[in-house]
Image 1 (cartoon, rainbow, N blue to C red):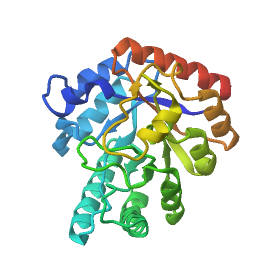
Image 2 (cartoon, rainbow, N blue to C red):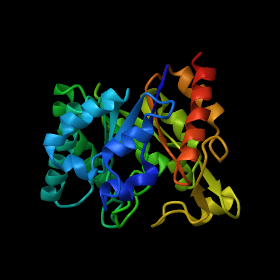
Image 3 (cartoon, one colour):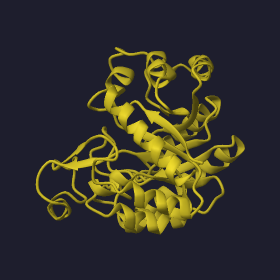
Image 4 (tube, rainbow, N blue to C red):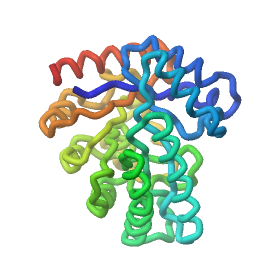
Length: 294
């Protein structure tokens, strides 16, 4: 049966920029949810000091929470090999942090969709960079998870492998027992594509998932595909919202994941409108998991 984690989507500024919330305060909040763990973020200010890793792991455990997943954003598509080597070194450090916190999944991305990089070059740069990180991941018992991402907050360009065809080509280019897919249906919507089409192509490689939902503020999904797919910035027609009430078809998603034997972690990326919203989203996912994995 899949296990449920939560990501502090609403508290990133507080945890990563202005220190108005401590990680322990976030763990206190998270422990009141019907979840099994928390997804960590490499940019938490307190984890810049390695001496804090063990105490924070112990605090989470005391709250009944595992730390299964690490969220980080390596940029592997830069044309300069020296730049890519620095990104590989960062990813290796995040893999070490994941293992030290007791985690088994560490995110990788392709990188930015720089206009000077061809499709073939981008796939090669990203695949070779991911492969360079896999020996350490295997040694430490960590699986690298490639997310169908949309765009990191601090990047000038969207994700290189944002679109389904490119993402699937990159997934196919990396075959390793310590490599899999972190499926995010909402990011596919942000790209103006169909989340179920992507899932159908990669479901056998999915080892973890991000759960969120999106709502159209105006217009139709056809308008979104024409105007927002693959462009800089975030889709203005869409907003975050309570899981189970938006555009994602969780019955269809969980039907396919159950069919392929998925039993990994599902991390909630929600709560931007308040902790009550996060609670309702968690309750919805608990019911759905029980329905499809009784």
